[in-house]
Length: 234
Image (cartoon, rainbow, N blue to C red):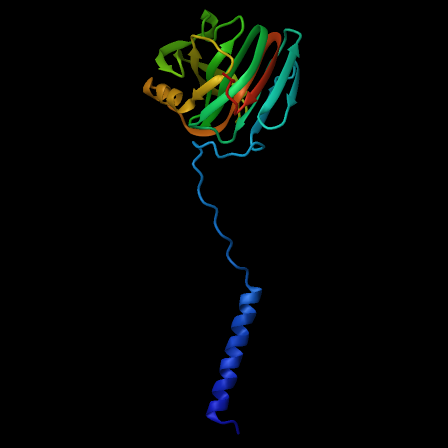
């Protein structure tokens, strides 16, 4: 017959064995990633989000280059496209960009993006071709105010898009426009100042989807070569 001391030793050995086995078999918890402030430029060079949309009739070649580089060549004076690189999700951010933008006809160079709930398509227009956005009667646009930021005055406009393509399929949604009066190709854009100007003008924004430095052409032709994340050299 085993003595009490021997039984205690056997139980202690058994408990140690089972505990060790469980520690080996059961998965160990992984370290949780720390939250990241999207306002800070802590992304890597290869982390840019690329987007290219074509209505199916535009004759356009989009070259998605390394890092923040992209280029677009379009021709034919027909159709609509939007192409560029940026972030997903977008939102308040200091955006540096540089490059060239040479349209012949109606085209925009802008910080372009979407929000959901509500669904909103927005433009921070840095330069454009022959047509100033929201300027013709057929645009049916309403000016909501102005904001002085990023070295210029921007006009705040809005208009409705009815049964048009969106990131949620065919839908009806507002467009918000912040249009630079002193046009440029290259510089720094503080998107949060423009978003605050939209809200101050009574234009509600939702949860940010993607945001890109975009080249858009409408029934036109031209070339564009942009580097996102790099300000023009002095």
